[in-house]
Structures are given as C-alpha cells and as structure tokens.
Image (cartoon, rainbow, N blue to C red):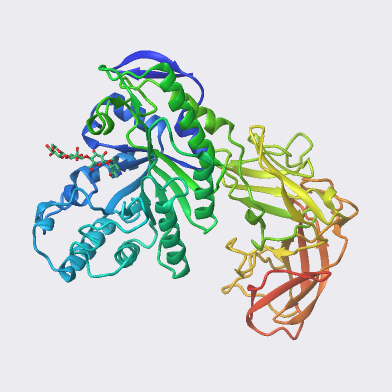
Length: 580
Ligand code: G3I
C-alpha cells in the first residue's frame, strides 16, 4: 500500500502500482514537463519521481532561456533538471532547439544575415546538444514549423530571415547538426494539432517520408496533444500513429493535457473530470498498441503548475494530479490503461538465441523474443522447478506455442528467452502468443521447419569467434587457438528434435543425453570435419546441443569460418574459430 504524503502529512492511500512502476513494465517512457524552481517543494519532487520515469524542461532548454546572450549560455535550470533525472533514475528529454517562440532579443533584433544565423544556430545546437550528450536521450529538434493548412510557418529560422535554406531544408539541417553533436540521441520533430490525419499531419508525414528516404537523422514524431474535451477522432489519430510507425519511426506523445472549464477556484465538474479521464485512458491505451509509440508525456503533472489557466482563462484542471498532488480520475484511468493494455509482440522480434536470425523456428530451439511491450521492469532469471526443469511460466510471463507454454529462461519487458516446445515438430506453422500478468498479445504466426541451427558465439552477437571449447574445456581463441586433429566442442540451438524425444525444458545432468535425431555436418574453413557427437550435455537445457568435431587435417590456419548444417539448413555466416 503506497501512501501519498503532502507537506509531511499522511493523506490518502494510493492504490496499486505507481504510474512509473507500470510504465517501467511497459518499457515506455511516462514523462512530465517540469519547472526546476519547484524541485525544492517536497510534494512536487516526490510525486514527480514516484509517478514518472522521464522529465522534460517546460522552458529551461528553449533558445531564449538557455542562450540569453550571443556568447552567454545559462545552463543552471537545464542542469538542475538533468541532475534531478539522474538522481532519480529517470530519463531526460530535451525541448526544444528550433522554435519560433522564446527567442532572445540579441538574436531577433541583431540584424544577422541568413549565413550568420546559420552559424549561430549550428553553434547553438552543437553547444546545447553536445553539453547533454549521453544525459538527454532524445530532443525535440524542431518545434511547430507547419501551419494548419500544411504550409511551412513563416518565421525567424525559416524565411524571416531564415538560415538560407528553402523548404524543409532548414529543418533537415538542424537535424543533421543535432545528430553530429550527439549521434546517440533520438531526434524528433514536434508539433500540435497534427494528431489526427489532416493537412498539417499530412505535410509532416510527407516530410518524414522524405527524410527517411534520404537518410536525414529523424527518429520520430512528437505529438503534443493539448486537448479540450473534444480531441478529434481517436480512429484518425491511431491511423496517423500507424502510418508514422510503419515508416519505422517512433511516435512520442509529448505535451498531453486536457483543459476543462473550471469555476473561479479552478475546480472542474465531475462530469468534465470523467471525460478527461476517458481521454487520458484512450490516449495511453492507443499508444500501448504500437511498440514504436515509446512515450506518453504530460505538460506538467499537477494542476498546481500548468500553462493552461494563464493562457486559457476559465480553463484548467488539465493534468493527472490535482493542485494538492492527489490523483484525479485521470490518474486512475492512466493507471488502468497501463494495467489492462494487451502486450504487443511481433514475429520480427523472434530470433534464434545463438544466431540472432529470425524467420522459421524449429522444435526445441532456444529463442529470444525482443520488443514485447509488457513485462517485468527488471530482468527475472527463472529458477528450475521441483523436477529440475525450466519452468513454463516465470515472473507472470508465458510464451505460448499453439497454446503450449514454452520453458522460460528469463523475462523482462522487451526481452524474453524461451525454448520452443518440441510439440510443434511436424507442423508447418505455429501460433505464438506472449502473455504477461494474464494479458495476451495478438497471436503471431511463425513458420515451423525441422532445423535452423545457430552456433553460440563468444560475445553473444552471433558473429565472430564461437563459444568453442577444446578437449580440456578451455575456450578456443586467438590466444588459445585450436589445432588440426583436435577435438573441439561447439554449442548450437535449433538442431531440431532429438532421439529419443526430449522433455521440454529439462536440464540434463547425469546419465545418457538425447542425441540430435539428424547428425549435423560441420565445415571449418570450407573443409568438412567429422562430427563425433551432437546432442545434450550436462548442464544444458534440452534444445541446446553440444557438437563435438574433429578438426580435419586440411583446415587452414588463422580465423576460419565455422558452418554447421542440419539437413539443408545451415548456421549463420561469420561465425569463426581460431586455428594455429
Ligand atoms: O522567465 C520569465 C520571467 O523572468 C518573467 O518575469 C516572466 C514574466 O513575463 O516570464 C517568464 O517567462 C515565461 C516562461 O513561460 C517561463 O515561465 C514566458 O513569459 C511565458 O511565455 C512562457 O510560457 C511558456 C510557453 O511555452 C511559451 O510559449 C509556457 O510556460 C510553456 O508551458 C509553453 O510550452 C509550449 C511548448 O514549449 C511547445 N508547445 C506548446 C506549449 C504550450 O504553449
């Protein structure tokens, strides 16, 4: 039971998990725009760090506040926000580098030429993004550059006087400068009233298509979502999110709030609060349906501090927590959406745990499923059950193949490891469902084949030197190469069924180990080598096979490619072994 503490007074019990805990299980960023001048207010800092896993400066990183003089930067507030994030294990998102608003006087009244403005903007972006490289994971590089009819906004950075580039050229340039300053940062184009499919979102979509096609470093589109009680069609919004994520781009909801009519004390009616709650629920639920919708951020988080009343007199109560930091219906509905949304998982995320190759699967294959959007916030390694087998459910997670739960080695939101049940043998395809806390993903259809061998590599990249042992169980490497005539052991998964049949998830310790039904062929450096054994071994889960190979006399020296074939299926290329 979590207790909400305001001003040191135990006020009300907060039911269930915090929004942050739930968001962490979704692998999604749940953020809030913040003003560091409130950090000293305990209730503000506590609620922020308890309920959110991301912060973004409401104003501190904008051009004017952070660059008040031509050669003067003021990083105090921005630094305080990044420090708060680091102190509370939160992510920091930057806002914004190129915008028509909050530009300093020295810039707007400086009479600079486009060429001068170009170098000023480059220097600004390099300085600000460079300063927070590795600490700010994403940026709104350009904000609000389009008009409602889809034309480009005429303003300082575009054409008044602009930096001398036509069309979306100045936007592209800003992205290239930001990418150069921090190649790891995710770069977003951010705008309002472009949530549904309309002329403005069409123009943004066309720009995104063009940027993607020409390799401009755009990673996603930010949708502000400043709503009243009529948001516009959710279906159209979802179609917009779908078309953008289908481009391989992320969507982040960046400035969500729902302004309500309020009385003179800033209080909204319970009917309006209920409508607001439904909107928050629907937006979060919609985002959870798309693995590439990676953040939901509110513009502020308590009605105590919000831009709405000052900008829209008679409106307010727009955020999940009220002005006493108490959860509103909107808070509960966000919680509910995070608790009830079905996980999203896709067959593209399913790969052989050794080769990291996707596609068809084989019975007994150890696979990794990447990208499932709901799961334990931290990595949960499974423990063997009473019969010494890997359990078919762990940490409330299951991966089902035609309804059969697979032995699960570990589980975390975004990555699970499982052994494909041998029961799929002989099928041509299987329906896979990912399940967490009883919520199941849509079924994924994946083809089934007899074998898809993958050889475990030393650095678990699937490439380079294999995890190969010599006869004395020493790792073969450049410094400890193997020799012609040596017997070496490599480890594969995806070798197919065994003979006799293997029970799912069994960890072999003693006695006889089931051999692979089809003996693999191994070539090293293009030379066939004789396979002495292929099957289970002590400590290996069924599905992972040890393959003992005698290195043929003709195998050349140096780092040699190793290929393991089972029937017509061959292992991943670029897996090697060192020979002297
Ligand atoms: O910092 C000065 C202070 O020194 C001065 O005494 C005071 C009085 O004028 O103004 C303070 O600056 C204000 C600033 O907020 C910081 O509080 C600006 O006047 C005021 O215009 C500015 O408002 C911000 C607004 O952007 C600027 O357009 C809002 O707080 C902020 O919520 C809002 O955020 C924008 C996003 O960046 C982009 N999308 C829309 C969103 C809402 O407009």
